[in-house]
Image (tube, rainbow, N blue to C red; front, top):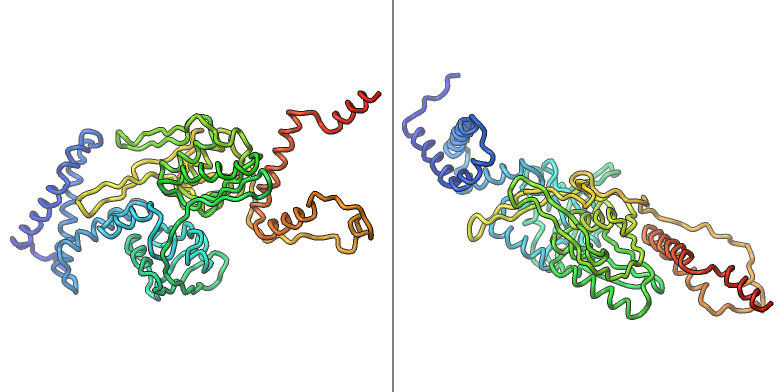
Length: 450
């Protein structure tokens, strides 16, 4: 079939489209050309722009429904960014507001951190206490449909927009999960997501548990306050820092949190093509724990800022990392406003741990691998101990109650149980190195008596 004849009107339209594109990108071209242009590159770019203009006009003239030029250009921008990586996106006014809201700690929706992977919407992690977490959504789930509407081919910002909504409104999620032969259907009710990024408690006297669910602007200060509050009750013997299912957040907050457990040194550095993309971020000089042993818990839902903290503490030998491999989101996104209401979130650099490891697509590998599992203790029913004898002498130190609490923790959260057990072992070994053993003291006492 012969190609259609190019009319003077079509030529004018194509030239106008090219002029608009060049006018809109003139400054960027002037800035980028000295650093990146190669011989012959301008010719290739011009040919590609002509092709784009041809496709643009074919769509606006021949598509079954009329679409205005502004919408077509927005689609083109979204497609261009989505082809780069899962985290580079075009932010409309609503999406820009959502991005700012997510770092402040309160919004209305389902409570999910998601990313686009090969055109599929994958769950990075549900937020603690959110409708998604309570419904059983898990890291790695693929969201196939929202209210029976397929998401294949939908942009990340559009998908997130559909999941957001007023408190009390309902939505149906169809998800695919590894190990399940059929998709799962979950009915969720949207709620106001108030993300308390830090929670703390004593696991046992001297052994602190600090849970960071998301890195917000104030998370560093919140972790410091939590530890100071705990230290008023007991001397700190060890800390479990729980970063499981933490999707990340603000870079500065991750640097602040890591710095709380270090005495100076580099936390993370970045490398990219732009002159200001190479940055190094260091820790403060004060370790708030005064050198107490630390175990950091991570899993597949630990991403971005979580991986920065885990990687820094691991490389500096400041903490033992326990759990499973992290997500592997080691890229830096920079929000670049292009108007008062719109912006581009563009991947501009990669994160590296102080030891030079790239986090991207590799993640943080734990020092001690502990998979999440349901543990059932095998008791010794039928056997008699001293405590079973009638009239036995009491001990009075509550040891029996501690055994019950430890058994409950083991069955409820085996990873946390193993972290606590490891901290106890490290603490015992540390004390033995710095003080005489009980046997030595006993021998000395007997010698003195003689």
